[in-house]
Image (cartoon, rainbow, N blue to C red; front, side, top):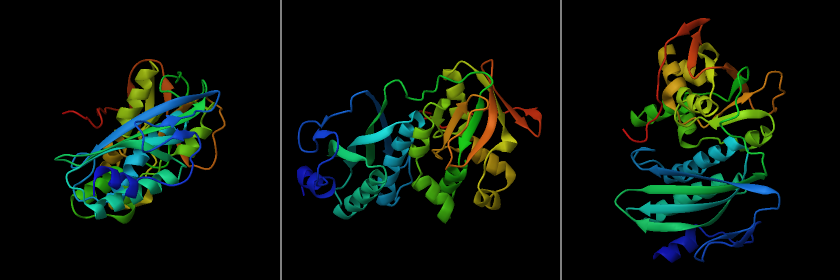
Amino acid sequence: MDEFELIQEYFVRSGEVAGVSTGIGDDGAVLQPDPGKELIAVMDTLVEGIHFPDATDPFDIGYRVVAVNLSDVAAMGGRPRWMTLALTLPVADEAWIARFAEGLHTAAGEHDLALVGGDTTTGKTLVVSVQIIADIDAGKAIKRCGAQPGDHIYLTGTVGDAAAGLELIVSSQPHAFLSARFLRPDARVAFGQALVGVATAAIDVSDGLFADLGKLLAASSVGGILEIDALPLSSVLRESFDLAAQRRFALSGGDDYELCFTVAPDTALPVGTAVTRIGTVTAGDQIRCHLDGELVPYADSGYLHFQ
């Protein structure tokens, strides 16, 4: 099977797609954003052995590479529209490709996201890159740079699960719930859209809560207080690890793809997704961590892509 047969068999979907004048099969996709809209472009690359363990189910790889990009879109309040795929394969194993494509299209289908182009090639290492184009009403995108002193800091869902799940996968002791939180993250797309006009700033938690909150605060030129004892932890994480490990996973583990966002005091929050207030924006340029009402030292740079 050559490259073009592979694309036609596993990645082309029949039928017209809204906003797509020309899709897969030409030199490039021709897209039609709606009037009064701005486009948001995001892209993530996953490399085998670095961003996911060797021998990960190809369905999970396909699902995850879409979900992590959707999470970036969610943090800005966008509506996912189109995506492109770059896939480097050591071997063109059709069974593997079919399973990967199933995961990719499953994640995309949950958000009416259309694959409109990309590239496939051969290489020594499995590398998967997805770019997503989203749209949003002009001037409405949520950015990292809008937080103000006095704003409340919130977090969706629970944190620490994915990092714990990955640790268990690597140690050959996978846990159904925790490992799934790493392999198939639930991007908060609908909630992110509901935050438009509500949140003053937002970021998705990919490299670790402490580090990612630090990025948001730095972009806004403010500091913050983080209440460690307020961190939302799942009952499964609490039951599976001691308190020190729970907090390590929650603060520095990453890969949860929850949304950390700030809102002005007395702002009504969207309903439908569990959120927890975890701190307050302050003047200054540092995060101060509180535990049981006391100031405690903590420092973590989060996941580093180059070490």
